[in-house]
Image (cartoon, rainbow, N blue to C red; front, side, top):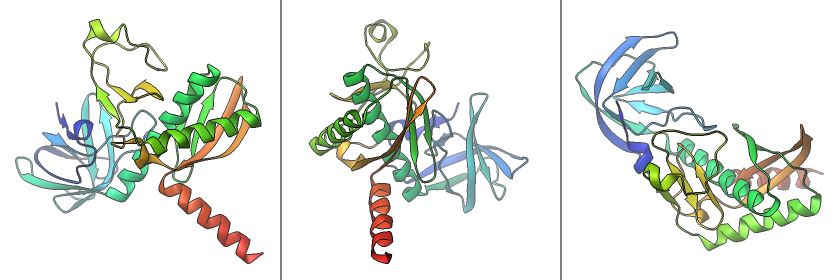
Length: 243
């Protein structure tokens, strides 16, 4: 099994690893390492990109328990290589995913609703909640999220033993067995999650809720976090100056 460096060190950009195998695949060369800092697509979060031994990492997926790096060039098995994460992409995804947790957690606390769908797109994040929210509710939620972010509280990541886990009220879309990784934003959210997150809440913000539409039995909220919020405000300012 590949050691998952990203679970313990999400801010690590550069690492060394041994190539265990390399095979020609449909989209490039599929490489398996003894350890990796590249996050494989999963849990609503896209995969990391970057380079391995000079080869571009195009995609990263978890296939039958193995983390497979699809590269644009072959890598020699047995060789020790240097991996470099595309940090701008990784940090952006961490900001969006962490912001989503804070929004979902505070919405759950205040309105008793569950996050039943999450998509982290290239420009926007969407969250599906199984309850209807009023415009006043959304104002409260956005203000509460950003007030929490200003506190800049540390994020906690734990893997409790089964006897402790069964006593912990964490969010999860389905029943889980085996080792469960919990990501906690103290006072805002506690959720089972395999993704990468910021170290403190302040690194995720600011958060802006862009829209809210009726979706199935609840609503779909569109939002941006961190750097995407600044980009969005820049776009709005540019549009206004052209009028």
